[in-house]
Amino acid sequence: GASLPESARLRVRLGLHAGAEAIPANASYSTDACGIMRFRNGELEHEVAHCSMPPGTARSWRVAHGGAPARLNLDLGAALDPGKELWPLSLQLCRVDKPLMGMSFCSMPLYGMRELKHELPMALEDWLAYHLNVAGLEHAEIYDVDGSFEEALRPELREWLVASGKLTYHKRWPETLSAGMAKLSAAHPSCSETWAYLHCLTTHRALSRWVVILHSPDEYLAAPTAARPRGVVEAFEHAMASSPQDSWVPCVSIQAANRASSGMSVDALHQRGAVLAASGFRGPNYYPHTPILDPAACACAGPHACYKSVSAFTYGGPMLTIDASFMVVHHFVEMLSRDWGRCSRLPASGGVCSVEDDSMAWVLPLLRAGVPWSFPA
Image (cartoon, rainbow, N blue to C red):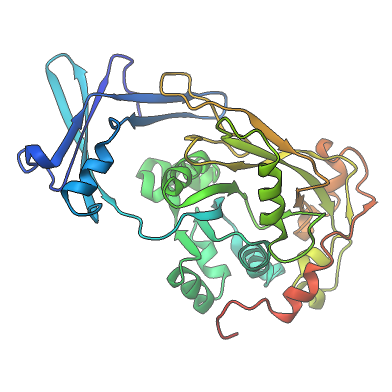
């Protein structure tokens, strides 16, 4: 939609009950200390409301009510003209009653998963099993454009992943934004991509310490020097412990290597681990690709980086890049047969994709044996 004018002022009301009249004076909080973080670049234009609570406010809530309330009502208002105030948005804030997760990931709005299911029936389950059960990530925030994720994953597994808290599925994501976005996305599926990342980061401010933008099932986050279960998380924790500790680090950049496919029989492509088994070669180059973001320090991101606001209320801090020998993303750019030969054509590959790389071979026996989901196969 349209941007708010530069002169707009934001105001928030927070209390146990909805509406100004229902919020008792001794049990509410109201502030004008709000601003708009405006993100504008060649990729996106987003605006994020940001309101600061005075020091001690949260503590006073806990003391007054014998603990943090399970739910709070929030009204967000905008004064567009002097003397004219609107309260267009009412929300409920729900208390999070579980420990902060270490690392989660969110996808781009996926589409065309039916083709993937047809050619590589186990690819989607392998991708989830590897990251959630082997690599050590704790939660997947999955978005799609066309509902095809639901069709590509066996229903009993999808339902169990959702019920167990390992996965949240946003079916037909553009439709939740607007009818116009849904219509536009039918022809241009990536239109709602940065909105998905914005939603994921906002959601995980209270849920996860770190969020990986893991775009789609052709990307595997790995730690070559820690080829073992939970090795990815351990390698990342070690890298962060070795980094500067006195400032925000909103974005950690992981480099990627493009991988080629050697081609396999139809029967082999239908087996567990087929994506990894078909690719023993990569390009000579590594290139910046995958951001791991601190949702408390990064409010808005694109596919490859955290973005800085062009207005007030800007989060800051350095961006760290982890050496590819320590952590890397394997980008299987020839996962589908229609893309065979693509790896060597991509400039980011740095030439012919003929560098032997078997660093993910240790994962194959785990996938083929059926990584346990604590769920009947």
